[in-house]
Amino acid sequence: MTQEPRLVEVRKNILKQNDLNARDLRRRFHEAGVFVVSLVSSPGAGKTTLLEKTLAALHPRLRVAALVGDLATAHDAARLASTGAPVRQITTGTVCHLEAAMVQVGLEGWELDRLDILFVENVGNLVCPASYDLGESLRFVAVSVTEGEDKPLKYPTIFNTSDIALITKIDLADAVGFDSSAALASVQSVRPGMKVLQLSAKTGEGMSAFIELLEAGLGAARGHAAATAT
Amino acid sequence: MHELSIALSLVDLAQEEAERLGGRVCALHLRIGALAGVVPEALLASYEMACAETPLEGSRLVIEDVPVVVYCPECRAERELSSVQSFCCAECGTPTPQVERGRELELVALEIEQ
Image (cartoon, rainbow over all chains, first blue to last red; front, side, top):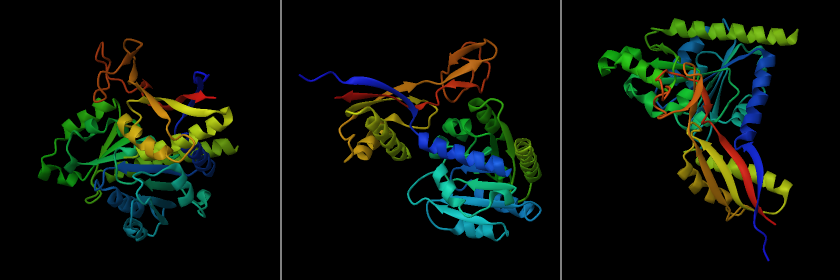
């Protein structure tokens, strides 16, 4: 006679391992006093250009570095390395998102306490990165004016796992008939109260607010590290 | 599509638990929130591939969908969202970003045969 199957409670997060890795990263970042910022967007929203201009604006005044994720090629890393900041490419193969373990590997050999701000550019994708914590302090989600004002309504999950929204390529807003207030309303609809910055990495418009925000975040990260150390 | 990555993580986790508990796993009970970023149908298809040639081969996934529940500061109550495109109280319309439930991506239980 066969017994009825028994139901045993487990109650564990399916991405437990990623969460543990992310927790380890967050602890290391915190101890080193490095401010870690990640960037997600769909492909072509301008993450790399934004990062290129940001690294150029901050380096060498601040010790900045970047990890850039792509399915294939090291083009982005080469482009960013021209700013003089240390840059590493994470090539994910067919994986459509970064996971905390990939960041752990990407950081090998880097002395975190010699960095001020570390940027992590995710693979261009507004769906999959939402499920993976990378241990970052701040996650930006970027949408460009060419993508349409309703993008946040189509991808509410990524807006709910990000801290700040960026509307990029605003130099093209008039050319594509971008309705800024409609886009802001879309963001507020899926994430009431979310901070939104509008900028153009190409012309520099709005970049100072972005840089100021990073500097403020760094100040807070250093404050935390100092408070923990004493 | 990252459901295959999720399915592989699920297989690892369930195997770890099954080894601890002993017996053969015939079903995995999951809870998946509407904000977990996972499509249940895609996970079902990916799971079949992910569990092939493992001790979990042939096991079923039983998925409970969890709707998004927000806290309304005006009503001072939890409210189920009527749409993930509109984070506001279903009763009074007050916008709220405070998610109480709906991010779950959880292995709740295993059905085990001795």
